[in-house]
Length: 302
Image (cartoon, rainbow, N blue to C red; front, side, top):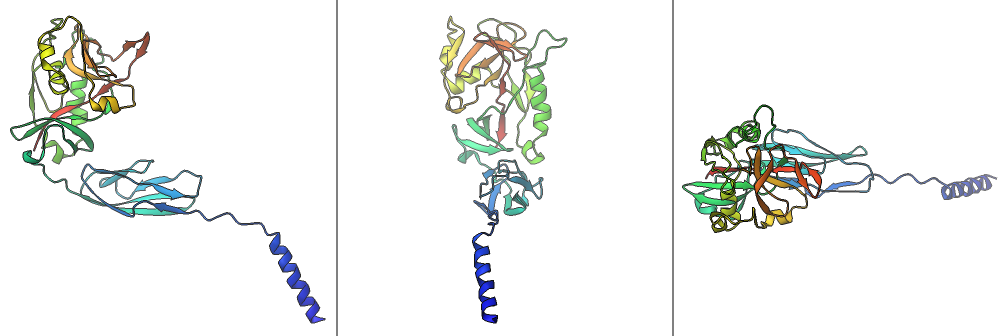
């Protein structure tokens, strides 16, 4: 009798196991790196592998050392150590980030055409001389009007809101160690050669925009600018303009064909010496386009 009862229980256990409801798979989460070392201003892309369909959340243990966005892009801020964490479905993985002080760059190691990291941005070197490098941001860093017209009808680089922003809020966003390497520069503000529009007084700036003369000097043929062609455009395509998928154009500091217009580089690389309204409202194929971009330039002490 005992054997029959035991056999019955075993039979029932097997039957139940056949109809058992499977449990959900445990969430797996892995990082492509568990540790990384970066120089100040550098960046690194962390990536996860997971079987979860939920959103992975990112966090840093110390935003003064390293920051991370919600795509896993890590940016090194200052020397030290921080932990970057990725979390989903209660599972957390971590990457230890060590940030080293940026090594000083000597003039002998920097040359025209190089790209370098500075202050969290990537810059293109346009010229090197007297222990300094003229650099311009490789990409448009933001969209912003040249000036917000209020009571000022004659707008020049000297009184523009964009100059005030670049030498105020933008400049102050750099750490003190980076600020000390940005040279004060006498910026020449020439009149527009085609239309005679006044360029205003020369200025003393930490950060500025390229002029018509400078953009043609560094990206095109300066002889064409001196010859003053009858048409009002000079066309060039720089590699960074071609590579950008964002349809933006970017300001130059030179005046356009009237006192509230500023020159700019079109989204296809065309330099418009006639310029457009400083508010950034450009009429393009009948549509209003206010996607005005900023590519700051500065002289960096090496």
